[in-house]
Length: 82
View 1: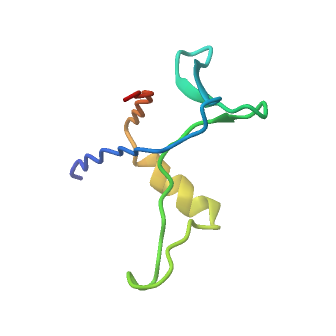
View 2: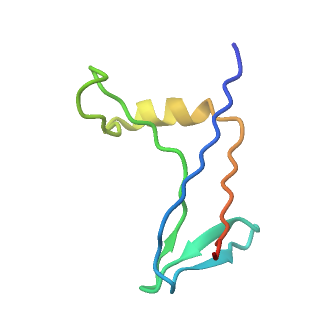
């Protein structure tokens, strides 16, 4: 078995009323104004042809098998003002 490192970095323009908060375990998540919270994490997408539409799997076992291969995950949130 070999290791695969994947770094996810997104730059998004979000509403000013979004805020960063931490869970009881210290995990940063986004607090949305409608009382919801948002955590951005990996979701595998699949396709039968790389030139066609990609979609998440509807098979829970496939998703769980993929997620079981993840040894660790780190998502960094940071608001930047210019």
